[in-house]
Image 1 (spheres, helix red, strand yellow):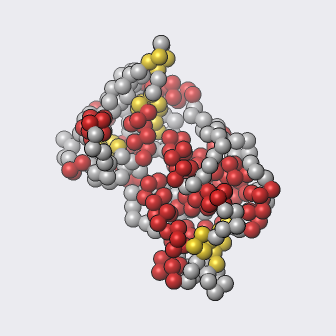
Image 2 (cartoon, one colour):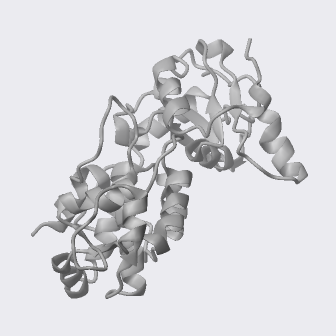
Image 3 (cartoon, helix red, strand yellow):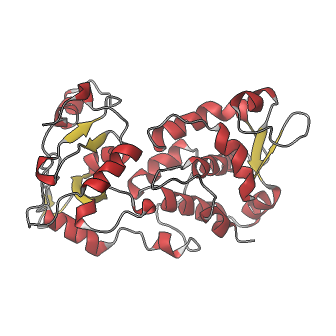
Length: 305
């Protein structure tokens, strides 16, 4: 049985380009728990808070519940649910899962395969991370899911499309050059000799959701602001490119001077435009990021004019 292919084809709720990473997040969490206790089951009432946290941090900015993937992941052949009386899942309602003592775990065949093939867990984890999340989030997500990944590089055996996403070198070069090797949010333009350092090419609409490798879907950002942008702490306001403003989420916290000057004070600041005449970020990609990644609001609901 090809477990990597099965993990890469998890059935997910879809509507247009809306994100629904519920099943991948649950499976990553289950892999992390398997590393700690291969024989342990995950009682819904015990892990509900952890799963809520993963959905809050890495899911879309919409109200949701981990009860849905806890029940529905069983349809993909990688997960099973049993109640205290020995029955199957009572359904996707939170109350029923709690009251029935529902507990889930990876199916026996997958647990056996993970025990026999030490590399399989890393291959599955990298497949799920690569297909559903941008690279800037992989290390934090793995840590939060309890996964101990030996290497940050995708191992052999993962799907070709994931291996090939080691950040397309030509796209990165074009995006950084378009912005004159300067962060579009803060202006950072560090170099070590003649080589730019601390600057990255960020996808506005994620590649996993058919975001193209194009300057109009990219930003040159410093490492700090790239991470905050992919986490949803920073966003892009509406409007044509030259008038686009930075949004800072109301959920962002930090009391120190650095948090104030490097993040909170960015709110309402104009996003730098490409300096080589390239098209600035296109509104459909900025709109997707506002709907699917940005953590809502905008500090004090600033009206952008």
